Length: 142
Image 1 (cartoon, rainbow, N blue to C red):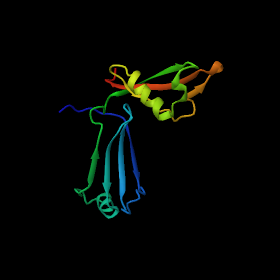
Image 2 (spheres, rainbow, N blue to C red):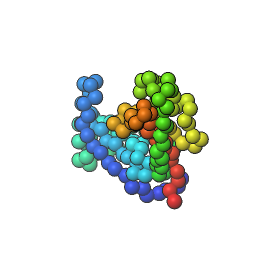
Image 3 (tube, one colour):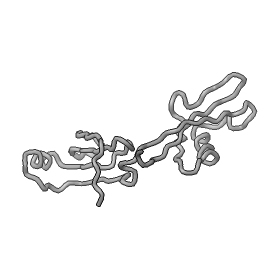
């Protein structure tokens, strides 16, 4: 197995999940990809035992995104200008996002068609509308 040293972030919190469980949550985030790839969920009493030297405590692990850990996240912005007479001008944000997903995919890139931010939909002079969206992909570091 290949061994590498990566930069990352460690977060320890006591989340309120709404399920009435009292837990400690430890998250590990890869700096390059921005992916939180490991979440450790542990009972506070078990966490205290491990913290004070009684190692080997059983915990719940949630693992995701291991295929991109160690890679770098590349982003690219794009826009689509809608003509004043296009029926797209009257679509909801959800329908516009669906339109982007169906018509604006690029090979090798993941489309982020979320249109909820303040600058994602711009109303331009002459009745034009510009949709601002982005793409991302994970690449091996240089």
